[in-house]
Length: 76
Image (cartoon, rainbow, N blue to C red):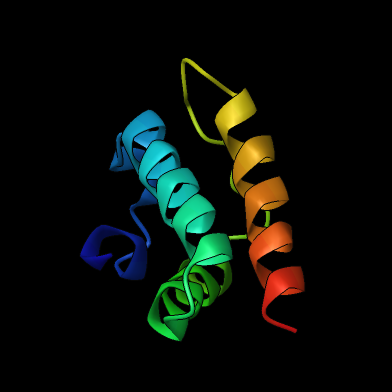
């Protein structure tokens, strides 16, 4: 979180971050605890919209957005 806030998002391990966000999003869609959804909202708003992660597994970004939308739909 601190690296993203300091605008050094390119120094992150994108695969690790996206995998963790995917796991949180999956759990958020099954949990009634809204803190997980709040964490997803935080990172979604924190990450730059033009961020192109230097990830080995680029599909993790797409799957994160998909799981995030699912979690939002479950809690709306």
